[in-house]
Length: 345
Image 1 (cartoon, rainbow, N blue to C red):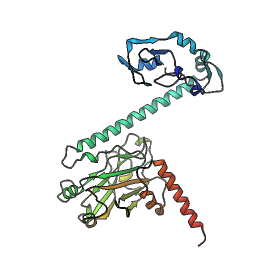
Image 2 (cartoon, rainbow, N blue to C red):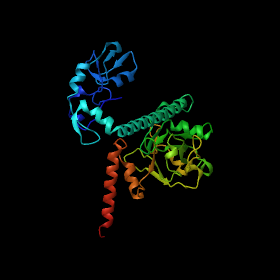
Image 3 (cartoon, rainbow, N blue to C red):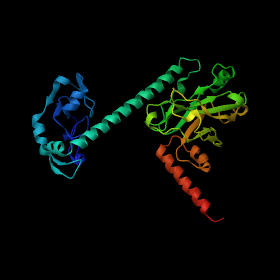
Image 4 (cartoon, one colour):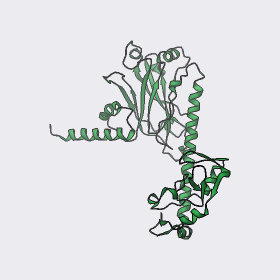
């Protein structure tokens, strides 16, 4: 078992804490090369011939580690405040207390840790799949290494599309009529989604407009998510000049449509805005939406029912800002707009 958790752990000398799990050492083992210690469980769990110290990254051969009973005896006098109740005492008596009074709490904690690890593992595997799909696209003539992006996990995606002129020609000649964005997520363990762009239009918008669609993808946590998916989807084609005359459009899902039910295959049928932007404007020389043969499209799922009046402000914010900063600025702008509405004219 990993080390001991206590309420006063942060007040204790770091030498009494495991370099691996960061808890108070349980059955300490010393790494003789660097001198740091870790719990015996953490040592065994590494299962390597050379143990890498999590604190300093120095490696110690596993046969050059030391069971340290003298240090363990010294630790028994450490003052402890129980992490589950108000008990105080010494480490010598703490394990007995945990076994007698808090065994159920410990089991719950371990189960939560196990679930957390499983969630992290499943999420990383899903990301690996997405990156693998993106990497496969490199083998095709249409693939471009600049199109590979690490998945976003906040319900927004800023999609950088390179080699636009080539992709338009491919669409016109029906070599590749559509391109899919990288997958993105509403949160870790949330909805998995992507966008689909028809650069020469789709259906009755063919040859007249770019068509932009939203696609729900099958994800590892769909069984516990709410369906049908009923959150507003916002698209923004960025004006790359200081004028920032972005093209913004949105739609709210038809919850009766199969596109927004729980995905049973890799991708649901795409749904969105067929006449998103006129082709004549995107193909116009010097247009502000394609610069250096690159354009940027933002896809944002609106989980908070943002008013339309806020959209231009929200989408004009610097995408380089952290999400929590942008959310705060949007909230401040919302309050400002509400305040202005209440003022007598």
